[in-house]
Image 1: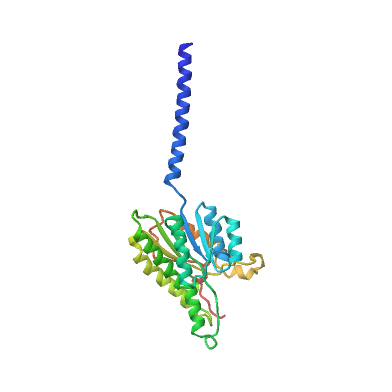
Image 2 (image 1 turned 180 degrees about the vertical axis):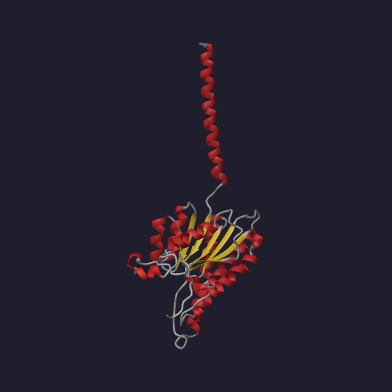
Length: 277
């Protein structure tokens, strides 16, 4: 009886010990792996909304800004992300967004500069104000957010060894149609700014890349024609998820050797030769 009693007590002790060790390891894992933090500009709809949804589903802490308060609030409610109403063409709005997040989070691990406008106007009828509006919305915010992140990282007592900036460009940085001067210039600028930032921000362990989407359908995908899909070597028009998956890939911890690059995601269209038959 005595021997059996001792064996049972020992088994119960071992069971309690095992449960405690398992609980302790779980607690340690949670402390060692806090949620990563991403800030997305222009996240209320289109590609930006898909980015917000995808990073939320992946378990990230997500904040986004947008000029449209109604759609921004709706997206935030649907995803659980934090929404900040802001016009990215205004420096003071971006300063306010970044300060709010630095104060709330302590740091930002990833910035995705997605916000942009597509305005196409004839070279004769357009003016400098039209050109400046596109540059100030599409290109200048990339510099502002990147600089603010660099200033913050420099101020940290304990360095953050992880950082990503992803800029959403366009295949129009290397190919154009008439009446797209402002848009093409803004996207070309994003590509050049990307590799310059990659060199400048290396000190703070921040990689900088851009993605150049081709035709990404953000509306009714079912309304597309067969010829819309078939003209692509991939035999389909792109979706916002094609861009979101690439962003998540670039944000994986081990993918820091991809730096200063522009990744074209267009179903192969820019590799086709086009001649009038």
